[in-house]
Image: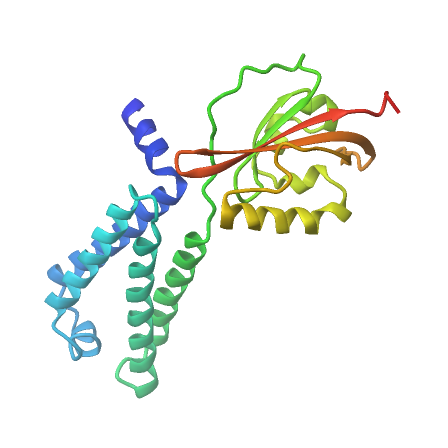
Length: 246
């Protein structure tokens, strides 16, 4: 179990998705070498031999599995998505021409899988920064988020201050704790961080309002920090409740 946990931590959830995409690629490659379906031979074998198609699927599998360990995994998703698209299009063409009356079923199957792969390709990878030794007695809320603005750490007095438990808030966008009027500016700032790795607001003490789970607002002082971790960007926000001071 420890080995599996280390492997899972190493590849992340995007890598896990690529692993299963590679398994699908391998299944199709194996079926082409083992099964000799006449319709498959007619629809796909008329383009290139099924042995060549099997190699194409195995190459897609290799791209998926190698990409699991690379900083950029785009190639793994792209190659598999392309071959699923091609097979779906060929099945649809065979149904339209009458060569395969049930071709629409195959087309739906491959194109749905293709859509799922494309969705997974946009799936943000949560960043888990090193644990901070901050407990609930700390007067400030210390909140960490990834470069998509999803909360990954809920420390200090965050739970008491905002009313969200750690279990409830982890994985939610950080906009859940800010009033609507700040959200457009925040999204634009997150986009700049992803593009440049920097923020003009980093290190500044900003006066703003926080939003509690019950919908009430309260005045806060916010300091945003940015630092790289394992090739990604981690956002750290320190929030101090100043309602008693006002």
